Image 1 (cartoon, rainbow, N blue to C red):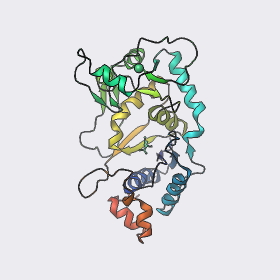
Image 2: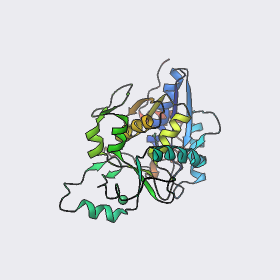
Image 3: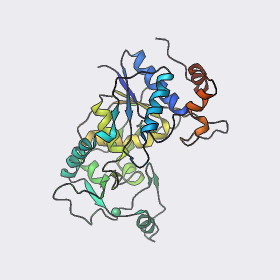
Image 4: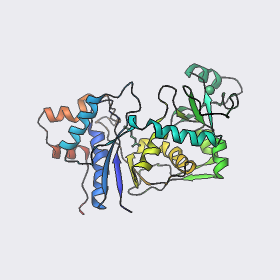
Length: 291
Ligand code: GLU
Ligand code: ZN
């Protein structure tokens, strides 16, 4: 099987050093395996995605010496695919509409019978208020958030553990498997379709990695907590599970994670100062493989 990796930036700001590192890792693993490196533009959040950021990201990546088949996959062009996957999950009876806003969730979580709120990969674990409130029959509901009924989904799969196929150098403290109990209490009923988007990061990433034939998903270790959700979705949707490589994060001098808003760290800013692609590579500490 041809190795296929991808770099999947969101065009909501400039490419920074942390992105460059992620792109180097993905491209290098494809190159050394004689495989393919693909680009995917993660622009489901149309309130924040901007065409000029996409153009700047592509321009910076080319300048760094990376190449990928054109055109890149663009999530905003794939809403029908996401709807089809949601319809599949809906027919399985494992999605339900949720009409709670942030305040409703906070209020439910502070009710006396609730224990301490648990922080999951998507924020506070949902208390389940809407789980049995709405009918799960009929066509896929539109214009409302849809949540995954985590306990029912796991029960349907007969899975008591979800495992990651992690490859490459292992990051410290990386979680490689989740028991059903951990997914239910530590992740909970995640939103798979946001009211304002008609999809979610989790659903789109799983749909697109499958559609692009990605065999090795590389990304920062900060996203590892979401991977249990992704492997679960792959299994529910009958999609293959790729191998994963969660790599280290680039930190600034104070050890803080570089955020996208740190525009001072933008590749474009370094370029304007006369840095070369090699300078950028050295700043990331990335060492290309020999083969
Ligand atoms: N679009 C995500 C980001 O910009 C990356 C998604 C992924 O690699 O799974 O952080
Ligand atoms: Zn709700």
